[in-house]
Image 1 (tube, helix red, strand yellow):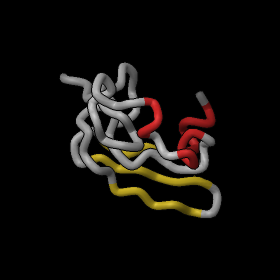
Image 2: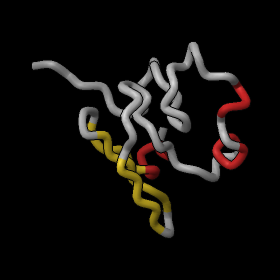
Image 3: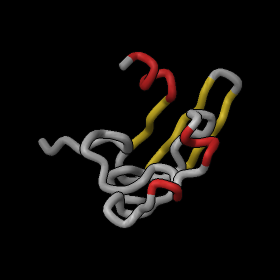
Length: 78
């Protein structure tokens, strides 16, 4: 059975706020709100695809069509 890494599993290949390959992304490409932790990730860190993101009062959920779903509550537990 093949295990597919989650959207934010390490090591990341793409920027989760820009969708650019990390090697090509400049540090100032990440929006200020994202650097402050106020924005959910918008792109999958494994494939760079745009994720479906839903913001709710107590967090957010993000879903990549290839790498599955991630909930902000899961990140708080890490």
